[in-house]
Image 1 (cartoon, rainbow, N blue to C red):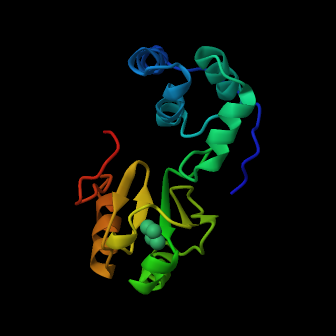
Image 2 (image 1 turned 45 degrees about the vertical axis):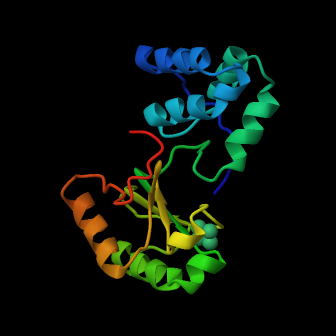
Length: 179
Ligand code: FES
C-alpha cells in the first residue's frame, strides 16, 4: 500500500466538520483528538488526502508532519482512495498458528485476488496485517473499525454472504471502536 499523499479536490460535509470540532472539544488537548478526527475524514472520503492533513494540522494546532506520522503509521488509515471494503487479515505468528494461512487462501479463492490487490470492480481489497492486538483470538481480520475474531472458513463465507446482500458484516465479538 502506498502511503504517498496526493493533492486531490477536498471538501468535507458540515456534519464531518462538526464531528471534528466535537472531538476537539471532547479531548483534554486538541492534539489528542487526532485519531478520531482522522477517522471522521475517512468515514466520509474513505481516505485522508493532503488537504485533510493541512486541515487537521491547523485545527489541532500540531505540525503537518505529526498528522502525517500518525496517518501513515497505522495500517487502517488511508491516504489514497481505497476499495469499498478492505479486509486486513493478521498473518503474524499467533494468528498464523491458529490458521490464518487457510483463511487468507480461502479469501483469495473467493475474491479471485491475491493479497495486496483490489478486486477488478474495486469493491474489495485483501491485505495482510502484522498484528491487530488480538493475538489470543486468532485468526483475526479487521474490516474498517471492526475486528472479526476466531475466523473459520464458515465465518468468512457468512461475511461474504452479508456483502452479497448489501450488508456490512458485523463482528460477533462486538469489540467495535465506534458505529
Ligand atoms: S498475531 Fe494476530 S492479532 Fe496478534
